[in-house]
Length: 185
Image 1 (cartoon, rainbow, N blue to C red):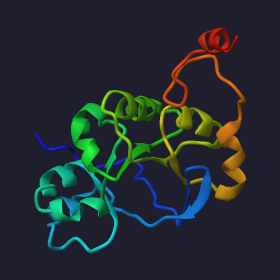
Image 2: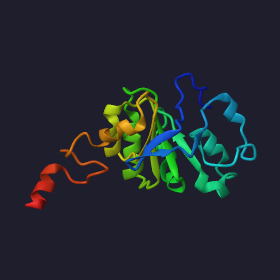
Image 3: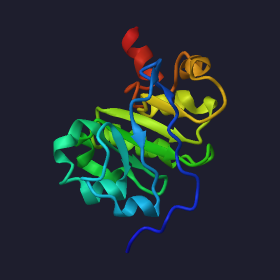
Image 4: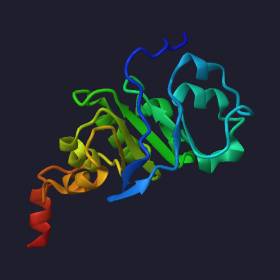
């Protein structure tokens, strides 16, 4: 059964983003998930780096195999890491859409991509996350943030390190604090 057309917010594609703790120019185009892109072909897809919605990528992946280093995929909030699974390892970029700051499903998606599927490429948060979530996104394995708010991305950099230490284990720290302290003496 085909997925219904998107009626909710689509991720934007800002000119600048935060990647690996620095503000950089966004080199990727992001195709929205809409009915017009349902009929797109590999031949009609413009050259350059592009992030495709998961259904479009699935349909075109064989035809786009030779463009492997310039094809990324974005997962919408109702799509899971399991739907991409081990195929994530073929991709240089996976973007996870947060349609609203209160929708936390993307945190789980990011962590599963890193921990269960061993994804090592760029993991980008896109959509309606907020500044206060940057630390938690980083802890779940995100290393790039396409922020859609009004603040300049450079002003957000300090939010990546809002906390100097954490109690729990996560993607960025495999040991909980009580184990780190026990090992450190």
